[in-house]
Every structure is written in C-alpha cells, then in structure tokens.
Length: 66
Length: 268
Image 1 (cartoon, rainbow over the protein chains, first blue to last red):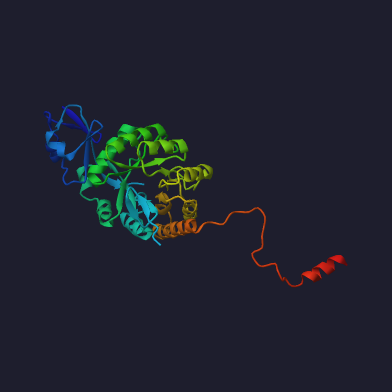
Image 2: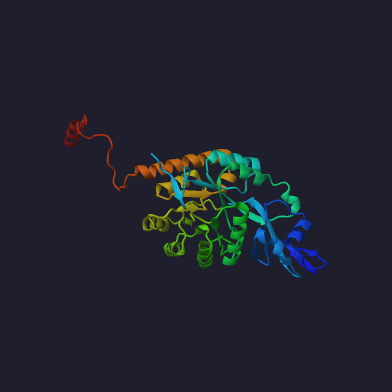
C-alpha cells in the first residue's frame, strides 16, 4: 500500500499505527503536528490512529511567518 | 500614565506586532525583534521532514524570545484549511491565539470574506482567540464581531506592498463606528511614518513584517518603527489640532511695530 507524506509517496507493507509510522519516518520531539487527509490528528490520538492505503499525511513544523 | 494595549484580556506595553519572515538571517530576525520591543510575533507552520527538524534555529530563537506567539494561517484558501491549520498551531505553539487568514485572491492576497467569517465562527466555538486579517469593510468587520472575534486586523494595503493606508475613509469609518474594538492595522505598512499615521488615527496597534525585514538595515528599521508607533500613540492621546483652510498667525499681531508706517505709505 502507498501513502503520501508531505507530498512524497511511501510504500508500506500493511496499514500501520500513526505513532509507529512517525517513528519509522524519523519524527521525534514535539515541534511537529499531523493532519491526515486534511484533518488534524491530535498527539493524544497517534497511538489510536491507523494509517491506511491512499492516506495523505501532512506533517508540519514551525517556520517564519508574517 | 499607563496606556496598555489590551487584547483578549492580556495587556501589552508595545503596540507594534511584527512578523518573523523574510529576514536575511535568523540572527538578524532575533535582533530585529529585540530592537522593535514587540511583545507579539507572528509565525507559521509548513511541511517539514525529519532532517530539517533537527536544525531549526528559528524555533529556538522564538522560544527564547518570551513573546506572545501569534501563529498565522497564511496561504489557506478555505475555511476548512484554516481551521485545521489553526488546530495544528494550537498544539505546537500551545496558544489559542490565531491570526486567521483565508486568502481569496492570489494576486493581491485579499481575504476571502465569506471563508473568513465561516472559519472565525468555528474557531471561536472551539475556544480560539481569533485575530482575523480582514479588509476595511465595515459590514464584514461587524460580522466578524458577531461571530465572536474581539480584535480585528484590517489591512492598510495588500500584504507586502508597503503602500500604507490606502483607504483612509474606510479606515476612519471603522475607527469611529467600532470605537470600543481593538483594531490593528495588519499588512501594507511600508514606512514608520505610515505606522505613526495609523496610531494617530486611533488604531490600537500595527502589525508588519516586510517593511522591517526588507530594509537595508532591518535592526535599525525595527527601532525606527518602535519610535514611530510610540510617537503615533502619544500623538493620538495628546489630540491632534483641527485642520483649517485659512492661515492664522501663531505670533501675536497686537502691538506689531511699523504697521502705521505701512499704512501711511499706502496712502501716499
């Protein structure tokens, strides 16, 4: 199955938990936030959220802004 | 005399809010924030991969600043995008303040008024303290107040243009009709004189970014804006004189010497 992470395709063997995927991708700390298919997923929900085939993830972090 | 800026129950000494983008370097950004004496700074969220995450000097500086963070929803083109990005901001920045932007036109970055009201309504219901970037339209501003915004941020001119206060009639109308609402001029300010003018007109504060970040010397320009905003506010509190079409001498005319000679000369 395939998922899009910040616009880039990633192949996964099977649906997996969001917490595990984030760890696999190398995200750590608390300076990032996640949306799946355009909807915010709270940090407290990571371990209860499954990532499925075709999901689009946005993982954002602080940047400069006006 | 205490003259604090009150926004959502918080009090601030500075009436200058500044953005953190477009500086030549993070270090110059940090120095500019300090020189401006701003207590509220804007920032944003963008996609980031783990490799970028490890070296985010910007974020380190921001956390050290001690400023009230005002995350924006810049670039969002629908109410839904803005609401979801606001939730992400709340989690990362640990604040319920949000500079709400819903952009309706790519060319002049004009707010989508309908999407803005829709997003503001939803975010207020979720407990956010919404500071909407809006136009100078009175009816729009009233709708934003109706859905629960307690602060409004009308534009002076489109973002990044440095054109100053383009529609003073509308802005003056907003100031007069919404006399109890904190109004912050957001966007379009290009020079300290324009910021001073906004404060002289009675606007509570100004928010700007490009005018400082793109100056030849950003840190010095940040200082210049600090002075201008303080000057403008003091002018407003002092009360400007009324404009007049005809001249009137400021030096006394009574007991002016020579006037009889001039009269005699004209009679000869």
